[in-house]
Length: 139
Image (cartoon, rainbow, N blue to C red):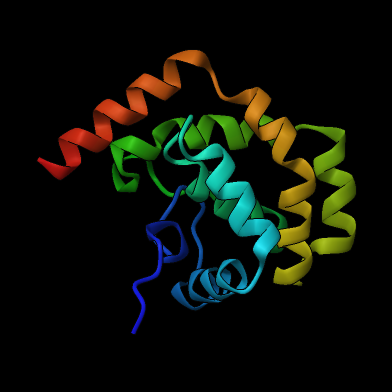
C-alpha cells in the first residue's frame, strides 16, 4: 500500500473536532487534487499549513467551533490558533459559513477560498517558530 503524505493523515489541530470528522477531512484531501496542490504549494513556506487549512475547514463546518485548550495544542501549531481566530473575524468567513456549515465538503471549498487570506495572516515569526517547535517535537 502506498504511503500517504503526512498532510493527508488527519491529526489534532487547534479546533476541537471529532476524530471521525478529521478522518473524513483526510479523505477529502486525499481525493482532491486542488486541496492537495494547495497544501503542497504552502507547506514548504509554512509547515503547519495543512493543519491550518484543516482547522479552517472544521471551523467553517461546526455550528459553534471551539478551540482546544492551549495545553492540548502541539507547540508547532500554536500560531494556527491565532491565525484562525483572526480569520474568523473576517466578513468572508461569515459569508462562507452561511453555505458551508454542517457540510464538510463545502467547508473544504470554503477553506480553499479563504486560503489567500489565511496565508496573509501568517506572521513572519510564525514560520521560524513553527519549524523550531516541530524540530523539538521530533527530538
